[in-house]
Image (cartoon, rainbow, N blue to C red):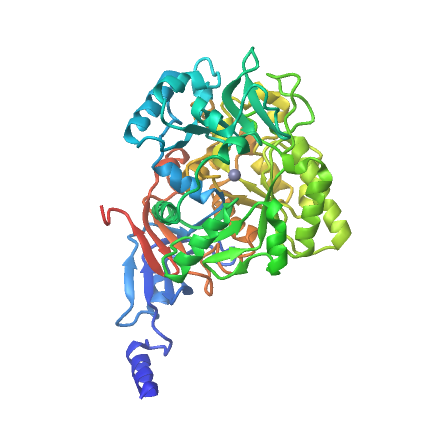
Length: 556
Ligand SMILES: [Zn+2]
C-alpha cells in the first residue's frame, strides 16, 4: 500500500522530464549566486531544504509540479543568505530591549535615559548593555558614577561601552562587587580612578569581570525569549547563519532545545572561550561538529582589548596616552598559558578564533599559530583572527602563508575611522581594516558585525566595505579609500567567506545545486544603485532551508 501511494505521488508530481517536482521555485529573480562557475541566473528550484537547480526561468520551470510553491521575485536581487561570522547573539538579543545609549549626544542625555529606564524597572532590577559611546560627546570624557548615582539609588547600573571593552558601574554595583580604592587592577584590566584614587565607576577589559560576576544570570525562560528575539531580528535582516563568539553553555543548551523543537530559524556555530578548552577536548568533538543548524568545535580567545578603550596591544604607544601601548588579555599572561591551551585545542582538532586588534597583538597570535603548525604539521585548520584591525606591514605575508582567515567587521571601519588617526596616527591607520591589502595578499576574508558591538544589518557592512565613508560624514570618498573592495568581493566575504571560516563552504555560502536553500530577496538591486544607498536597502523575503522565515510587512 505504501509503495503504491508513493508511486502515485511521484506520478502526480513528476514533470515532463520525469524528475521529482520542487517544493519551491523562485522565478523571475536577478540571482547573484556567489558561485564563480555560474555567477548569474533567473530562477532557483528547491527540494526539501536543498537547492536542486539554478538557471534561467525556462530551465527551472521543468522543476514545477502541481504542488510546487512559486515565488515570483519580480526581478529583484536574490543572494545567498548572509552568514555573520562574528556575533554575540545573546548580548545582541538583550540589547534589542535594553536602554539605548549609543546615540545619546551628551552625558546629560546619557544620564536622562538611564533615569527613565530605572523608573520602568522594579526595585533592584538591573540596567545593563546600553552601548554608550563617549566619542560622540564634547569633550569626549568617559562617564562617571556621579553622573548616574543620584538618579539610581535603588537600581544596579552596569552599562557597557559599545565595543564591550569598558563598562560604567554605579556605586550600588561597585559595592556589590566589593570594589574600593584599595582593590588592585587585575591582570589585563584597569579600574579607572580619580585624582584621589577612588574608582570612577569605569572598569576596563578584565576588570569588567569583577562586576559582571555579580550580575544575576538570565533565567532559562529569559534566555529562550532573548534568543528567539535575536533570531527573528536576524531573519528580518537576511542573516541565516551566525557564528556565536563566547556563548555561555546555557546559550548552547537553549539552542539545542530549540533545535529539537524545530524552532531554530538561524544556523549557529558556537565558539566558547578557550579557558573551557578541556570540556570540548574531553568530549572528543572536532571543528564544525554537529548538523546544519547547530555546530560546535571552535574556541574563541582574546589576545588584547580594543582601540577605543586604549587596550588594543601595539608595538608603539598610543598618541593620546604616550605611556600606554595597550594590554595583552589576562589569558595571555603568561603567554605559555595561551600557548598550552591552543596546542591542546589544535591537537584535538578544534578550530581557533582569536580576537586580536593591535599590530603586536596580531603578530603574537601569528607567532603562536606558526608554532602550532611546526609542532603538529600542516592541516586544514582554518585558523582565524577576529577583527585583524591594525596590521604591521610585515604580517600580511605571514597571514597568507599560515592560511589565517581575517574575520572582519566592516562597520567598525566607518565607526572607528572617525577618530582612529588621533590615537594611532596616519601610518598605522593606513593599515587599519585593510580589506584590499588582505585580498591582494590572497588572505580570505569572512565578514560579520560583532553584534551587539555594531548593528546586525549586513547592508551596513556592505556599505562600509565598498564606501569606507565614516559615520561622521567627513570622508565621503572613503577613509583610506585604497582599502575599499568591490561589492562582489564584499558579498562573497559575507557569504562564502564566512561559510569557509566555519568549514561549511560545501554546504552553504552560494546558490549552487546541492547546497542548503538559504537565500534572501532584497528591495533593491545592490549592483545598480549608488553605493551610498546600499545602507537603505531592506529585505523582502528570507528563506532558510527552503522555508520562508521572514516576509516584509507580514505579521505587523
Ligand atoms: Zn566580538
